[in-house]
Image (cartoon, helix red, strand yellow):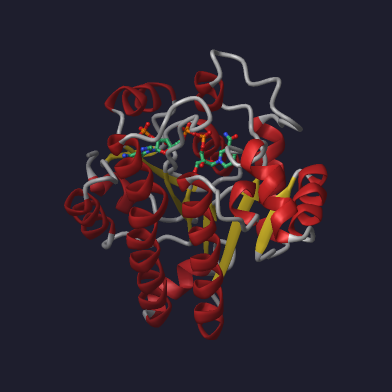
Length: 275
Ligand SMILES: NC(=O)c1ccc[n+]([C@@H]2O[C@H](COP(=O)([O-])OP(=O)(O)OC[C@H]3O[C@@H](n4cnc5c(N)ncnc54)[C@H](OP(=O)(O)O)[C@@H]3O)[C@@H](O)[C@H]2O)c1
């Protein structure tokens, strides 16, 4: 874990914490915020990815933490508690190709821990931090330098469809969508914004790795930059649940209007493994 003092000393710019910000979509969001003048902190478990960021983007503050370990996660959150922030994005996620590989115990434990349990741990901490910061007038002054304080989580379009044969991935992302909605309602009196992102396929290295190096066959796949643009727009417009690309949103909306037996029949063989 990097020296926390580095995060504390450069607090003139608004500060964003991206949990799962060491690769893919999270890293792209980190770099985007950096170009907008934000002070950026990222969290991930891979020492190699952290070393790369430290050498290529030295202004980004990095934290090593394995989110599958609740004690490690708590230590990270305790350490971060001394640092004010205006925005937190939970982009950490775990997915496997359940269509090809049967879900084993290790994948099941990991997916549940990262997509659901650590997410809840982090959102619980982050919401109470933001509430506390708002109470402290000197830190509230910092808030005015950034956007409205906000919590954002990266779910998936897979979580927007309700049907019994959904994968663990889809079910955990569905739970994330419902949890974010509850936080959004709970944080209205504090004027803290909560947005949930439910995107279709994004052409990240992690998705390519799951598809033998090439994910271009995935329907309506978008570039990471296109996804970043959609997400930034959704945050600006304060969209509760941003579902994109539009083509996928129409399809999932149509599927959700089908009679349940028809939906189950279609998805059992087709879309239930969408990441
Ligand atoms: N790519 C898509 O098609 C797609 C579509 C819809 C939604 N999403 C969602 O978007 C998010 C980002 O996906 P991505 O494609 O950009 O994948 P990615 O590059 O693998 O990003 C996942 C991030 O989570 C972190 N992470 C994973 N396990 C962790 C652990 N045990 N402890 C701490 N950090 C951990 C990773 O860091 P370390 O490796 O350093 O641990 C990485 O920073 C995920 O939540 C995913 O479900 C992706």
